[in-house]
Amino acid sequence: MMNVRRMGAMLLALATSTPVFAQDATANTGDTAWVLMASALVLLMTLPGLALFYGGLVRVRNILSVLMHCFVIACAISLLWAVCGYSFAFGTGSPWLGGTANLLLANLAAVRAGTTIPENAFALFQMTFAIITPALIIGAFVERVRFGWVVAFTLLWSLIVYVPVAHWVWGGGWLAARGTLDFAGGIVVHTTAGVAALIVAMMIGARKGFPRIAMVPHSPALTMTGAGLLWFGWYGFNGGSALGANALAASAILNTHLAACAAALVWIAGEYLKIRKPTSIGIVTGAVAGLATVTPAAGYIGPAGAIALGTLGGLVCFGAVMLVKHKFRIDDSLDVFAVHGVGGILGSLLLPLFMLPALGGIGFAAGNSMATQFGAQALGVGVVALWTGVATIAIGWLVARVLGLRVDEEAEHDGLDLSSHGERGWDFNQGG
Image (cartoon, rainbow, N blue to C red; front, side, top):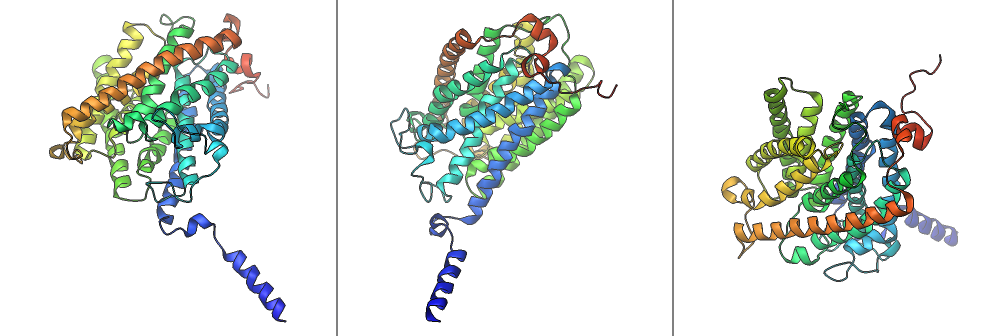
């Protein structure tokens, strides 16, 4: 009977036990729950948010290809991140690149240093950022790119561009040591994706008929739906970057929302002045411009600064779209550089101004000043833009030599849904 009782007690103890990391005194379950939820929100930004946002903007015969690009990127980058991406981005190493201790997500700490969450939760959250960054780039070359090139380019670009930049800025690398700030990705995500998109758009060339033929979105309704999901997911993108369920997360989310609202209204005001019609595509593009612009600053500024950044983001990005498409005639098809790139760069450079306590910001570290911080921001933006541009040219050229970059004219005419995937996104003739 005693043995039976002992066995029963042992089984009860096993059944009610928790993982070791959850018992750690410094681990906070509320913070962990928020970061896990934020990870789901950021993944939602790619699948299905960005997929629908971009999918509605292309012509009807190419919607499925856009969804495929987003989906395959999510799968491929998740595995790359687990194998080596996280270790090289956030592992202990040199100022230039992390180490190898966390390959295959091994040796993760019970609690990530400097946080109150388990390191596997931190790795998951950062994985979703690694996914959406190359997914943003696909908007530059929709309707004419080879599927194989997208997969190979994405893997190499993420390993050579995204991972080192994440380490430089967020992983304790050399830019972080120089004082460069990026709360949630104005430099790491939007500058890298925007610059890469512009480079690839020039490498692949314009779609057939651009700019003579109007290439109107086939479903503004889908685009608005995707934009709503992006906006919703951005709460996790910026708010989750606080790495805790706290006042900083609330402030970041509030600032995110206000900036998006301001930029959206500015954009449709600009449309009304230009074409006398505020459009659905315009209001959502403006919102995304505001979201991208406030991202690097979301945790460092106040509501007044967020509204100002959103307003400026709407104005500058609106002008950038006109400049890239109509002045330079570069077919960055879905305005990745003009919206995400320009917005992220603008927010990163204006961050020191809106950090001023007089404007509601958190102020500067002891011994620092607005001029010093601006220098650090300009250094970060300049170096990252240069590295991204050079590496993108090299990677894009190399992969194109092996797999080809652009589909042939017939495939482009038929649409990538049929020519690349043998399917239709919409089959209007089904059933007769």
